[in-house]
Length: 90
Image (cartoon, rainbow, N blue to C red; front, side):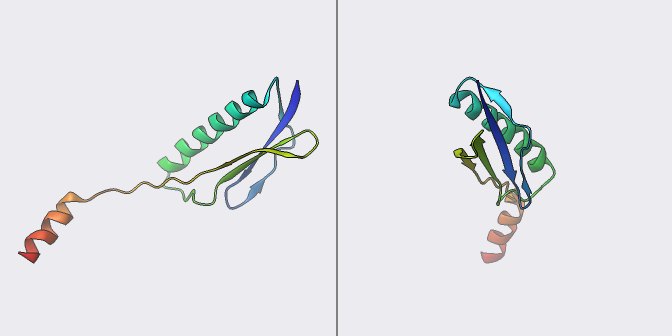
């Protein structure tokens, strides 16, 4: 088993000083994706800006083995406003 560290960067660096043990790199990847998914869910519900988020997974020697970068945006489409604008153009 190898120890991996899941370091978050969301505008502020949050190094993982404990890490967790995994039998394979694929297992560490799964934890990274699940962790990001949970954090995204909570942050998107709070209308947080996640444009600068990054997770850097390192091994027990400090070498980067996985980088998860992502962006997500939620936009509400106002069809009523669009209909009003079209009516004004006519």
